Length: 220
Image (cartoon, rainbow, N blue to C red):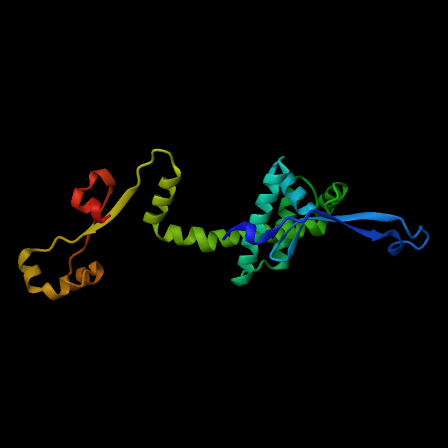
């Protein structure tokens, strides 16, 4: 999925007439409101979202922070489409725990955020979206990998310089006489079924690719 097809950076400023807030002001006076810095699948990313990410994660470069927020939006949208949700009470609990970790009450946290032009609703919305992002990564990416440890080790090895991946293979040691009597069974190549039928436990071996015999290495 290419981000360029989903995102249109539009960088514009929405101006509203001040008259909408007070009838005592001249008609031609305008006030600056929230700025939209990107749109992901018709959902706007506000400047406050990016600033909050910079504040929470210590990212100084605006472009880098924006790219990360776009990623969070994309994944959280996917999570919602797959039925994931964060209950409001859970969000409140997360916000409360975060405030405590900073030595603040929730009210004090919101006050400090407000001074930075980052209201409590901005913070809560980001917390919900970020937890959807983390949840989706855990459920749809990490969980399947951890269930397949060999695939995970290969993925990790591919990211490490000069790393040598390990392969796990299973071997059934079947006596010749038993093999001759069960030729049809062996043709299935189903090692679990064969081991159960013959009552022979498979031998598991873990080795680097270069340690395997050439014939086995070609198959792996």
